[in-house]
Image (cartoon, rainbow, N blue to C red; front, side, top):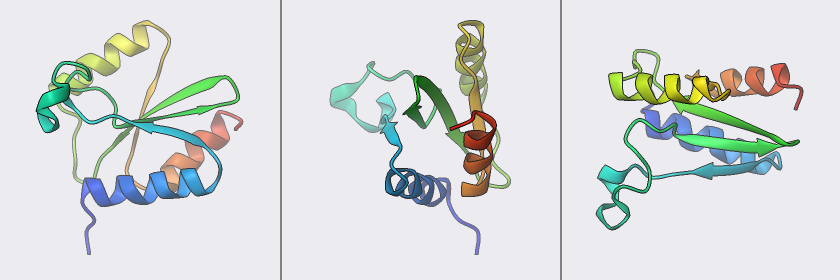
Length: 102
């Protein structure tokens, strides 16, 4: 059975929190009208703060693609020195954490 992006994201965040990582997930403006404008469309799905590092993650299904808005935001963030990691499963996140030395 193929998981939805939300199901993949939920499993990853549950594991991160269970493992003791500090995780922040932000709802995009389109999903919370009262918060509209606070989180720009295209912003990464969640971030992990650990060992003085901020790791940004975008969750996609196996067939999911980064949207043009997401590409622009990711590019803007890269210009400021922040990489957005596109992940499709928990193992992808674990690999990023290992590569980051956390």
